[in-house]
Length: 135
Length: 389
Image 1 (tube, one colour):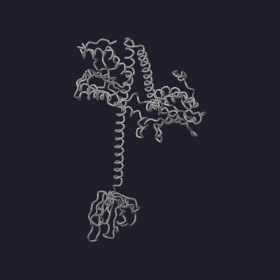
Image 2: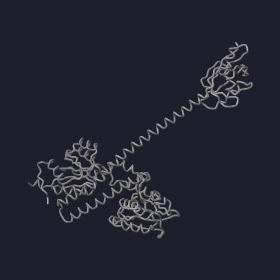
Image 3: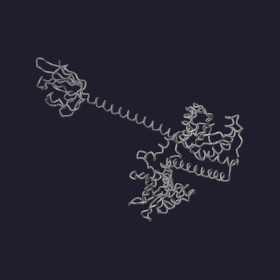
Image 4: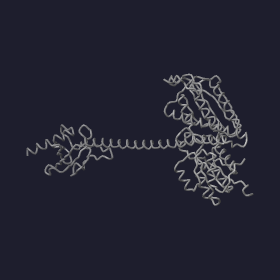
């Protein structure tokens, strides 16, 4: 019982503050602890600091390192390289999708991310987890 | 033998018989005389031209007094002009110690050949030009694709934030009244930001199509600057930035379109605030000379490297950097520069200022544009019905 009470950590990389805020808000509502990163380079730093995330959600087009660079970095790491990774983006360029697939991404989702879309995706990713709306 | 003489007289080949060593001509047929313009007695040595051009073979004594053949040889006619010939020499009579020279004038053919080469060169050059233009068009086409990719991303970003945030509000997934207000503000701000982007795109398209309507009046610059600075003081205060205005001549006026100048100065000023360190000063100064008024915006940020100044005003550079994406369309500066020029002024970066970045907007003090642009301004957000024919 007590292990379930420890909040699982999600890393969110997104350069647009309003989009980041609302995504983080939804994840908190779903019971996660959220670490925020304003671009790909900061996301890499956060992962290096502590790679123990149960999920990573990243935008693609960001300054410094983009979301695909970040994804490749994570997949090349020793610890938690196979962490579930969702790309959330406003662009569906074929070359991006190919690179994402090559790096075994768990989802390529187009913005806007609605609460239903996000919770459905998370339920599919973690079938054993019980999602209650945190108050 | 008489027949033979008749043939030589009518031949389309020149024949000259001349004495060894002295070169004195003992016989020249009509063709030779006509080509060389030699009506009287002449000497073959006088046909030797001074060798000037390196790629041309000239007639010389060695050729004259030996057995020789040249496919292309330069001779000097009696009048001093050049003649190009296919030419052969051989001993004619041992008895008289004479030589014979037979030639065909090929000056005209050579000229045709040279003209043809020039034309071929021109065709090759035109072809190269076309290839280059084709490359440029392909680049432009790619730039347009990049532009569409960039713009769709720029439009979707605030739109996504608005939809996702308003959905949270609609589903009442907020934790507190404070958070509700915060999310409401987000929707409003993102809507404003979206409007800015759409306006940028429309302006850019209008500029490209040459369809910007200007409403230029002779207005005092002080009123304009004061109004704008008041508007921006809130943003500046957020970063504890001091906006310092210094107008040399407070009654100075110049010709400008208020809406467009506001757009230009807002763009420069908001960039200055964005790139200025906290607790710094931004100087807004106005100076003038006989013909122009200069509005200068100086900040204390890192400044702009000399090799980046052109890129700032180039929309295609902006479009090339789409992957290392910075917020916004990047069209603000290219638009501002073009608008300044359309108003008869300029927007440039003063590189002699080294304490930060210094943008200078110059505006004309006299009417230097087509008469139609000098007309009263429109009410903001209202369409000028008189413009519709």
